[in-house]
Length: 82
Image (cartoon, rainbow, N blue to C red; front, side, top):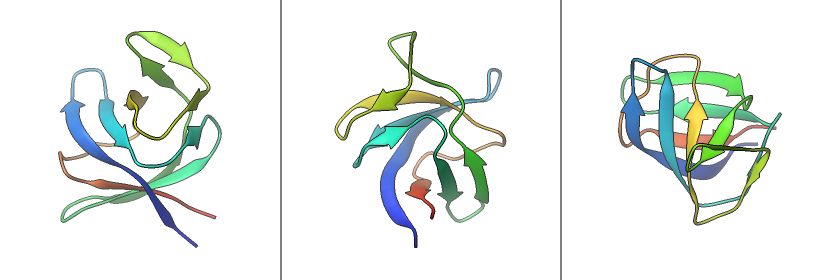
């Protein structure tokens, strides 16, 4: 079962990082899915940062930088899987 965890607010293509505004908690190692009009892929959370500081857990309400495997678009939904 999937549940929403956040939304992409910005994407930095040169470094492959998405800025995600979280609506739920997110931990390193969890599997997530990016879903949008032109986006649909799954990946594990391997690298998260807040203000250039590496974190292993993020809480609802925070904006995080998240290393992504593929290009994402602003507005893409981020869902927890499993």
